[in-house]
Image 1 (spheres, rainbow, N blue to C red):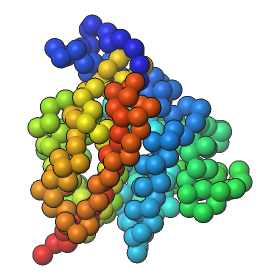
Image 2 (image 1 turned 60 degrees about the horizontal axis):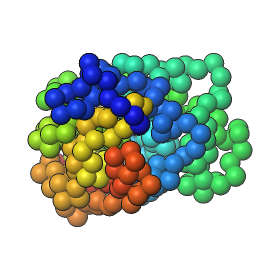
Image 3 (image 1 turned 120 degrees about the vertical axis):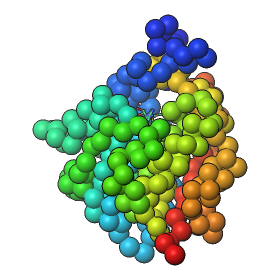
Image 4 (image 1 turned 135 degrees about the horizontal axis):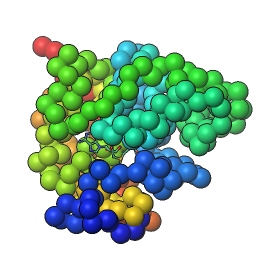
Amino acid sequence: MRGLPVTDSRSPGGLADYSAWRARDYFETYYSEVVLPDEQAVLAYQLEVMGGADHRYGRALEYGCGPTLHRAIAASAYAFRIDMADWLADNLAFVREWLHAATEESDWNRFTSFILACEGAPDADRARVLRREAQTRKSVRGLYVSDARWHDPLGAERQGFYDLIVSGFCLDAVSSDRGVWRACMQNMLSMLAPGGTIVIHALHNCTAYKVGERMFPGAGVTVDAMAESLLENGMARASLDVQIIPCPANAVYGYSGILTASARKLAAP
Ligand SMILES: C[S@@+](CC[C@H](N)C(=O)[O-])C[C@H]1O[C@@H](n2cnc3c(N)ncnc32)[C@H](O)[C@@H]1O
């Protein structure tokens, strides 16, 4: 997430739009080499929420996965089936490549080791890492191109469909317009079943974040805005948790905190 925006893909506000997105740039900035401390914190949070459920989730969705696998690898021990969606086919091509890879060696191995460590296996051997990844490959069913600005982002038949939705840094990155973010929240949360769980991460109070040579939009989401949006979309107040994870070292990328939240949708009356 670094550098100068290119002229042909800038919105009037000077931000790049997603026609300028390069999955490889994103991956290399945030996911090559190490599991960054802020990523460690949000992965641990996702695992804690999923691990706290008294049942395995039936249908899970990772919304706005980008070119990443770690949230799906985390979810695969807690959900029978996982669908993944993103607006950009280029991102899904990365995901597909991993799902069908001939080799088991990849950057995601280190995320899997971290996930297993969070689950109480700090010295998981290679076989165990590969087992978890094999489980993920089996669990992931659908890969869908989807626009969160659509009223039914995966079609009307997916309304109230998922028992678990995990979404990392997607909806707040669609636009710098807070109204667009609110609409995207409504659209995505309409796919959550009554009683279902949402785990969502956003860049805290960020209006632009860096990827490669470009700046992409941020909706400037705050704790209050996140809590309000979750409540107005039918999440149970008693289940609501919204936290800020400070990451001052990331100010150079356009944000110095991460918002992580979870909630359960009210059960059907
Ligand atoms: C910051 S990345 C997050 C990727 C990944 N979830 C992660 O945690 O690293 C933002 C993602 O939002 C996706 N995106 C942007 N606009 C979108 C839209 N209108 N609908 C759905 N996804 C969108 C982008 O393609 C990109 O993958």
